[in-house]
Length: 396
Image 1: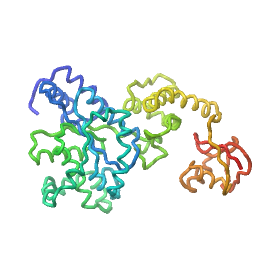
Image 2: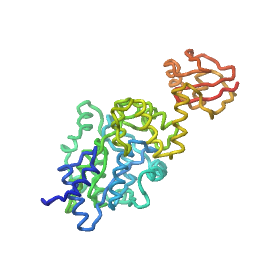
Image 3: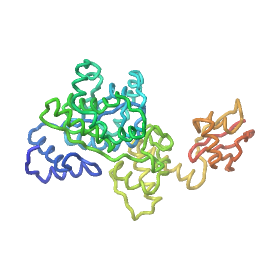
Image 4: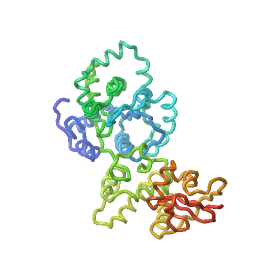
């Protein structure tokens, strides 16, 4: 982009929007120039986000990007949401230590059904431009794919950290995976993107988009707008539906959302405040009180104030005051009364192995007493607790 003087108001906009993000190339100044040029040319920026519907639920990690997109939308720019009807069938290899299983067309369509309903909790999806990259990628001829493949080299593809690591370790890399960054980059050509959003694990893919745009003769190259990945409730692994016990989905019940947020490590609070809310972290406050403020704010954002109030009151009663929820379900034993079988049948756990681990870890109580024997049979009425937030009234 030519060297132009940046007005202060556009620099301020760029600084506000990019808080917590990494912008390439040239950082905030490049974004400020884009915003300024857009304003005077009266041509809204085209801001791209690709979504591969590999699973049906979105989680709080996804909202980090969506909240930034909302800021662009509020400034009058065009949000382009690309459903990865084609790319999801390949599977993004970013950060993966092995080849990712490809999804069928039917799986992609099924998973995509709830995406926009969940996104509407953050964005005005009705004002976004929604595209499906299957519309252009599936119609390509073989010669078109050969042309796309010639836009880069194997040597450059092998500079990706995940590919380089897998090659060094002797792990397989499918040639199909090489096409993923090329396909994502070609999306930027098709939708004429000025900016593309992604997590920090998308650096290679987003910068590849710039190369692909140049290869196809566009007179501009998109800015890569990258945001940090949010760790799950364990504070270690990035938030992902692959690890449901550490993931906070947008479809969680208010009670579970609040409870999971209260379980995050104290060290994660400032990051959650910064990337997931509009309120400031106060390091001088009592950590428990600050975490309750965080949990309430996020639960309110996605469920409303009334539900957030209920979730907070129940947490205080059940966790802080060691009480029992008022509305626990009843479970009538009609089959095995073994504690392991009951935990699985109640969906407190996903498998018998998980049930045994929960018991051995001291996470199962009946009428307030810990159960330590996996052979325990429940033969009387009482309240069963599995983990921190799951309860059922057992009726023999």
